[in-house]
Amino acid sequence: MAADQPLQKQAPGIYRRRIGDVMVTTINDGYLDIPFDILRGVTRESMQNAMHEAFRPGAPRLTVNAFIVQTGGRTILIDSGGGTNTVFSMGLLQENLSTAGFIPADFDTVLLTHIHPDHSNGLLGPSGEALFTRAEIFLNAADIRFWSDPGLRDGRSPAAMPYLDSAASLLDAYRAQLRPAEAGEVAPGLTLLPLPGHTPGHSGYRVDSAGETLVIWGDTVHVPEIQVPYPEVTSEYDIDERLAEESRRRIFDLVATERLLVAGMHLHVPAFAHLVRSEAGFRLVPESWSVVV
Ligand SMILES: [Zn+2]
Image (cartoon, rainbow, N blue to C red; front, top):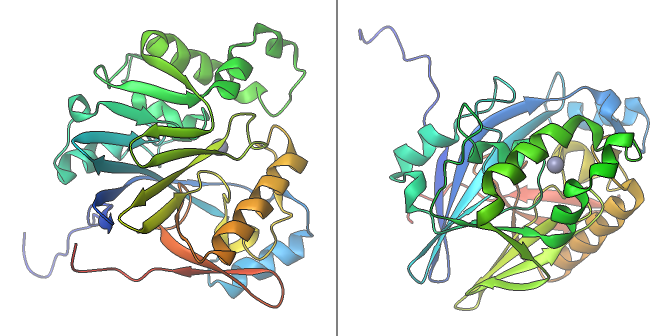
């Protein structure tokens, strides 16, 4: 490669950060661009202005991340990105896991925030086979119940319709490894926080270690440029939009009041930030890249 021909490929989407004695690694799976039409709650003009203010031209972009948590001899994956079967702009999980030094067999635990394909389909190989064969898969029992209901096929929940097949593939492939989870501790120092609405079992995970805390808030925001200043903005993906908004406001209030570090599946890499109150509502303060792990 000649010096005047720079590589066209981005550096690996990996970032390590310690929370007390726990190592957390962001693994980027790519991104997903969505039309403004999917979002509602404020005018299109307000959304476009918010994007403009954030210097983000074009369509709202959902960065898609998973996180590795290493604690007390456990190797835990939280969400898995969309894998290679969904949308072309996702599917970097395996490559980035490998660059970070992991293979699927290293993981003893997978914690899912919910079962949407951009969070769970990365657990499946090209033929729909389970890739994380050694892991117990924890998922809020409310999501397992909801997505396992054959009655959903009658269209009673329009927001669920596009995802019924991907949810079924995931549940089928991992039936024997699934562990229905409730609020509370799911692994040492890791607590499931129910944040229902986006899906009935949508959950965050809180990591506490040696006096430090991280709240991994799942899909509390899909488009940070819009939903942080306007927490009332819901999306067509939300199974219950009002409840999703209520959960978003509740976790915003908690992390802003207690000044807790947050990480998000759709926060831009490296995906760690603080949320602060501003005159209008809230403002996200992304954490700067740390050279020292
Ligand atoms: Zn989702």
